[in-house]
Image (cartoon, rainbow, N blue to C red; front, side, top):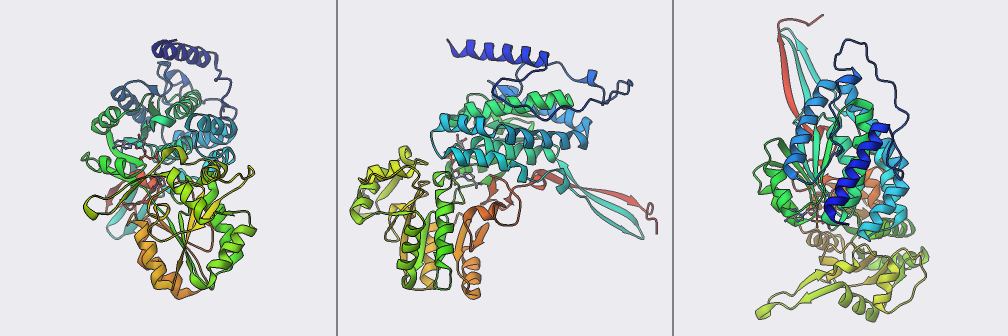
Length: 498
Ligand code: NAD
């Protein structure tokens, strides 16, 4: 069957289902719809005022059409008001949770990276993303009247999502962006675009049924560099949100539009002799093995004080991680990286072998020449500070351990490994001065003390969640306010009631 026919058939089926009030079999819909309040005046609450379906439910083959449809949708949302934003947030959170098993499996089947249990969990926790309640205006009143500063929408946000967490990033982005009153168009990662389109279609069907708003989140079905360029250039797209590696961050910053960039990381961990070794070992295993180390905030290398390095490694083994010998490490390194020797005495360059990204520890172990039982969480080995597993953002369930002499060396090596991404760093210590020094020196967006990386996103630590952490551009863990313009409304000499 040709791609054109498939698309056509899917559109017709979706249209028929929608007209019958149904949803695709595999996808669970939002909670029971509340009856629309149509007072009969034909106003904005009237069900009959909803625009006619075009049968696409947000999925477009053309980037310009996707942007134009999102713009129309933004205008509809503006008319529908804050109650519609609240409804959209409710729908996305409920559907991410109720479809977590099906969509998690769909994403794993398409990308073939990561772990099913964590793919499911990443969708179940979309409920931790903040909503409309974050947009409280700032008011001032005085002898000259009242001034209100409001968080208002931009219009359409152009978003790029990664292969590492396609539906979770997209879902969290829809919540944050629509809570702020915007519409969004997605150019997803090509290797995770099919599952992203399934979620977009399902969200739009439910949102249309509940609010009459069509295409609040649109997606380019077959994304490419050209569709990315068209999306960035479209007049309706006011700002960009890109979540990905160095290439897309650079490309977004060169578009001339304001770009909120959730860029790459390579989070170092420093462990000293005041830490609880058992707690540190368990936290490192939990963080570095999460979704086979696909998280940008995930522990990627450990600098351990010489005096406790053996104790830490022993605790890691006792808690289920497997230590590789030097020979096994060499075999794994050869398989996991392509190393190009430097020319004329220059530095050699290591490129990560994509076949190993996000793969299970037993796959890595096999390449190292070891057979391990399935269920093994994490591999580790001792390396030098210039090892490719330290230098590159490797996204594999393997963590290198490097001995350091003191805090100064631990901080220096951590800074080198972090490459100035200003993303995430982690410390296990109860020495207040060490905590302060590392925090100041690393200057990262997330700085986590005595816990696994995910405690920085509200999982076991305080705080809220987003899978887009704006690092080089400084907005931090994105939330509804990230996607707003601050506008001032001034009443002179009146409405002060005291
Ligand atoms: P990737 O950079 O390969 O792709 C990300 C997105 O950018 C994809 O949609 C891809 O198609 C697009 N893209 C890549 N290069 C491009 C270019 N030159 N022009 C236009 N578009 C381009 O990343 P990935 O492998 O899917 O995801 C992993 C990377 O994302 C890691 O570096 C990770 O640290 C980072 N990440 C960061 C965050 C964060 O919140 N800071 C969250 C998740 C992932």
